[in-house]
Each structure stands twice: as C-alpha cells, then as structure tokens.
Image 1: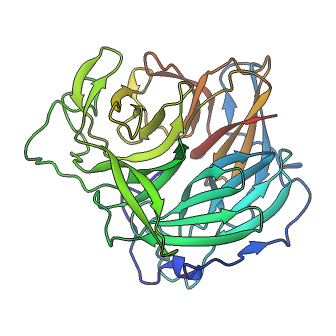
Image 2: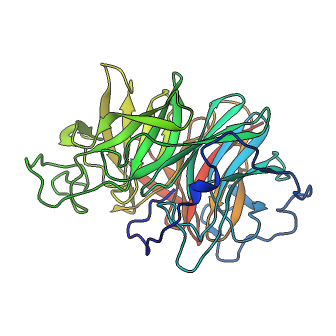
Length: 383
C-alpha cells in the first residue's frame, strides 16, 4: 500500500464521481468460476532462501490490467483491493485516459472469484467493520474517499471528507477496527526540512538523530466516523507525528516523525501497529484512542541496513493457516505455506521485492523469498 512519493501529472476528473456518493449496486456478477491461479507458474525470478521450509504457488491473477494490493479475510471470503493503474493515487485519471475502474474482488479460499465490486478512485486499504460490512479507503495521496460495502445486499456507498484538506495535507491509506472504531493511516503528509520548533532527536534513522526525509508535524492516524448526512466522513486525529515516543529496542526517548504512514496491523497483544514505509520503521500504538495511549517505534533492517516495508502480519496463535501475498505489478496473489505449519505469532513483512521474517525484538529481517516485483498486501488465511 505504498503511497506514491512523487505524484504523476494531475489532471481533472475525479474518478470517485462514479459513485455519486449514493447507495447503489456496483457489483459485477459476470465473473469466471474457475480458479484463476490454476496452471499459472510462479515467475522464475522468485527464489526461496530457506530451502524446502516454505512452498509458494499462484493463488490467483488479477484480471485485465488490475493490480492487487490490500487483502482481507471475512469468513470464508478473501476481499482483494485491485487498483486500476490508470488512476493516480490522488484519484485523478492518468494523462490521456478517459475512463478507468478499480475493483474489490471477492475470492473463496481456493482462489475462485465469487463476485467483484466496482469502487471509486485508487483504493488502497480495507477493513472489516463487522461480519457483513467492508470499508475501503481510496486515494492515499489526496481527495480521500471511504466506500462501505454491504455484503448482505451487495450495495456500496461512498463518502468524501467533510473538509477540503485533511490536517496532514494528504490522503488516507490502510484501516483497522479496534473496539468498534475505524482507524486510518494519514498518508502522503506535508513535510519540512526546517521545523519550528525543532523537536530532534527524531526516530527516522538508527541513531534517532536525523530526519532524512524531512519532518512531519501533522497527524499520522485518524479515527474515522461517518456523518449523518450520508455523504461525508469525519477524521479525528488520534496520533501525531510530533508526539514523544520510545525508540526500541534500547528505550531511548525520541520524537516520532513518520514521513510515510502506510500499512496498519493489529499485533498479538491487540495493539495498533503502523508502518512508516520509507522511514523503515514500525510504530506500536498501545491503548490507541484512550488517555493511556503510548507510542514506541522499532527501526527495521535487512543485513543491518534500513529496509522499507509494507504489510506486516503475525501468524495465528493456533490452528492451520496459509499466507496470501499480493505482488501488484506482477498482478499475482501468491499462496505460501510453511512445511511444518507457521510457528505461532511469528511476524512476516512484505517489502522491496521480498517476503521477510521479522524479528520484533531487534527489528532485524531475514529474506524468505526474493525476486518478486513489488509485494504489498499480506494476510494469514485461517481455515
């Protein structure tokens, strides 16, 4: 769920106007029933580094030119955000393009397509609000849209922000639900290299001393609520980039400074976790949204060097499961299994062409698969 750091040419014509911000059916039931991953070989560039400990296959391939991103399991269904590459991350159309359509595709656990939902703009995050409702966030760079999918009657309703520009200056990315509250990452923030006051030391390098990508003083996480007008949503900041945090593993006090809020996850303790992708760090938010809220940050490294990462997930504490990993430019969803079953609550991360095992005590990561294109979404599918 990478926010584009350098925007392409912005043109007029917001794609979210397709929804009209009204409840309508945008479901395409004319879909194939056979498993789209059948007979598709894993690209030869994808190489495992752990011998026979893991196995990989193609679960599905996105149709047309769509690129899979965020993944969500709800019951026995897998909902996959599929972006139309002709839509920019701020929701506008690419130059010369007159129409484009992103989708959320619902699969069963065998990779069979159940149905598709047309969603507005450039979708990038999703969350299960309850057992029958999926929220989808679009346009991570600007002009955010929240689309609510009712899976009972297959209707969609889209909401735009009740303010023209969010306080951090960008859009919304991934979402998670904790205690009935939807939390969304504040992506593509406005940064400065001359903050006033200067709140150094910052957490964006291993020494906690510098801010390589500038300084963000705005919100990095919002609580999202739908307004009673049925057309707009409200964003309430709950974590700010200028907050004081604890730099792990040493416990050094630093200023948080997330310059690339991206994916979010819930760790085995039930706490909200957010990655700052280009800063190569995971941010742990304990007791989010309460007076007892506290923040700690863990720099993530590969062979001792900072390594940008996207989704991180922990394997289930018990039971059988397999991993799904989306490789957006390759248009592929990979199914990955561990020969002896995934160890309970082991952490894995996607990032920069690799699938990685992540040590949550030290931040050191170990490659599991290399040679992928650009993996984004990652989940464990419980069976």
